[in-house]
Image 1 (cartoon, helix red, strand yellow):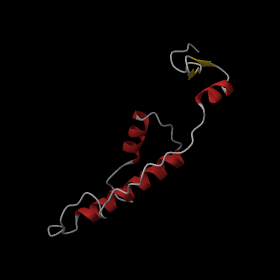
Image 2 (tube, rainbow, N blue to C red; image 1 turned 60 degrees about the horizontal axis):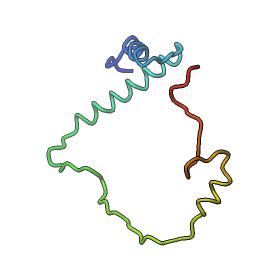
Image 3 (spheres, rainbow, N blue to C red; image 1 turned 45 degrees about the vertical axis):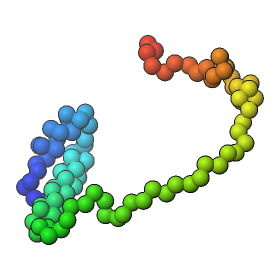
Length: 100
C-alpha cells in the first residue's frame, strides 16, 4: 500500500459522507483507494504528448428508427381499472410533505 492516502483521511471523508465504516471496511477502503491512486500515478507517468485528445474511444452514430403507430390502450378503459381516477388522470397518494 502506498503512502498516498491514510486511513485517517479515509475515515474523515467517510464521516463527511455520513458513512459508518467498521475497522475492516476502513482498511479495505484505504487499500482500494491507495491502489487507485497508484494506478492514476502510473497513467500520469505515461508520455501522451502525441496522443490526440478524444471525447469517446469509438465513433458514435445515432441509430434512428422509424416511428411506428401501434394500437394503444383505451384511456377510459385504463382509468376504469385504476383504484382512483380524477379528471382523466390517475389519483395517487402524496409522497412528499407528509408528517411522519
